[in-house]
Image (cartoon, rainbow, N blue to C red):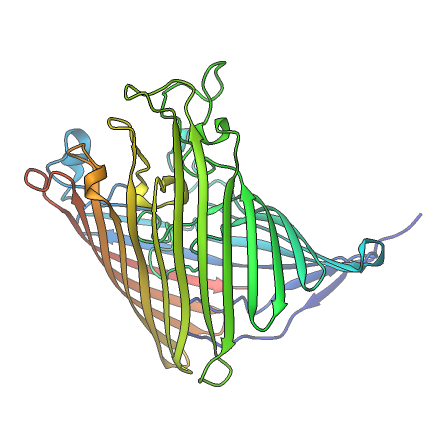
Length: 414
């Protein structure tokens, strides 16, 4: 009988702090099997606290700010303050480092499995803050031949690849930062010279579960509109990375695109059944100094709720029009000390006014943020302030939602 020997190795290499995003874990626990498949554990323990002067649509995962002029419970909740605390962003991941397989043209095999505790059971409601549920973030494998690679599973989208610094619970989705995670098949080509071309196909409706015709997805006559279209989500990105004028700091510029389609089983009153979703974007990482960086991610498109754009509004069912939107975000990060980084950011998601008709439709999200990051080895403290304004379509009768949001978090990386 063959016995598998497990060798435990503690990784001692550390990565110094840097301007956003936060540096990778400092340590990991690695297991080696007889087939030389390495499994490295990583993650962090984290506690987030939130305080709002005025109520957002969700205290822990905000996407817009309520107005007192909204009807029903939303209007009654608007203007009220709140306080919340949760450990949901605590994360555990495993990186798989497999062997080179000669029988498959010397392919290198790797993979990743990553979870946190931000699942939404019970019909989409957050569970008790002391009974969190696991959420799958990443689950993918990669076949790498050097110049060409193939990935399969669930991971980040190609559209809008950068991650903003504040509001880590919702990463500014619906508020200037489109792009989520979804099941996908991805191919990448690196011809050299700093160029990378990547394309993917994924399932449509993975984020919004759109079902405009109103039936239940499990019924015999209606299904999720994205899957019912018979077409996948298609995304691509062309990136160029080059050595900048700052030593050991690279400049990265990428252009990315998105296309998908939704189809209803029952036509709207307007007669429309098929809707398109398309967008283009630009992402940039620029180092002005070894301690000063600029990061930006911009987008323009229509029917973007399945990629977290348009303030989470995709199709106007009253007119049959796809709702257009543009926006993005930009951040200036300054590392003032080896243990302290200051980040200033602006974030905008601006649905096109002419595509909206409902008085309560969200017309614009605009956020200004000041973020502080204090890091000593594997321990980090973050203190963020967000000045958040949500404008509504009928601005004559519905006042803006305005909130001062404060976030304090503590994290221990491993």
